[in-house]
Image 1 (tube, rainbow, N blue to C red):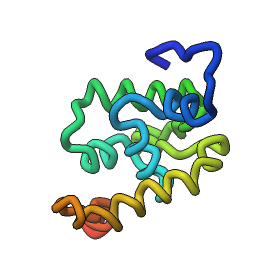
Image 2: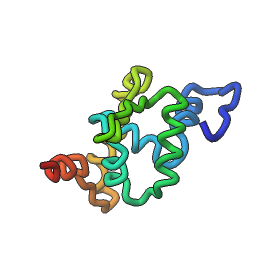
Image 3: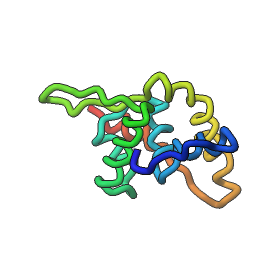
Length: 123
């Protein structure tokens, strides 16, 4: 991981947030919780993230053992997927995703359905 973790934490939540910390990591994990994605798909799903940051966050998540990169052959770029360790975060990731969907209107925010749009765009 880019930033070293502290050796001790007073609260388990503090530790969890330190592992998931860094802008975009939780968002990437939420997308991968729904299905594995190619880098290009993540790029489309996260248009506000630069290639450099997306690559760094994916590297961090792979190094932390939360994401696995299944390399493809010449014709495919491979896919990123949640590791078994990260799948144990599935309930937390789903809760974060649902909370955002359920409460966005209260904050006058519109929420899209990017994975559905991505899937419809496939031939």
